[in-house]
Length: 72
Image 1 (cartoon, rainbow, N blue to C red):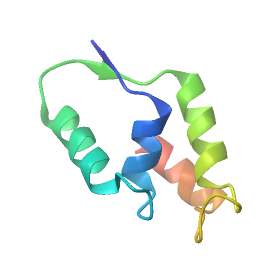
Image 2: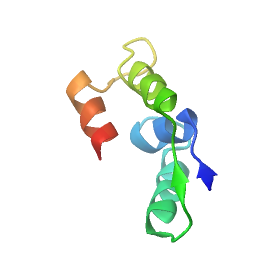
Image 3: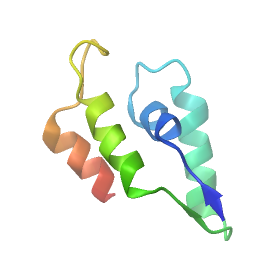
Image 4: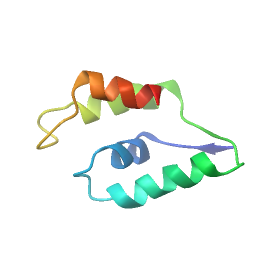
């Protein structure tokens, strides 16, 4: 089982993140792999807080965008 942490989720989601492309590729590879992986509930709470924070990003995600990504 591979555990995905908040930083990977944030970088894969937030286009202005420094490691966006790399993180997006890691998530894509995990999703297409037969290897089991997961993220804990706390990571999704942190993800929401980080991607919607207006002082961290030029264009933070809206609450709706963050929830939509978590559901995906």
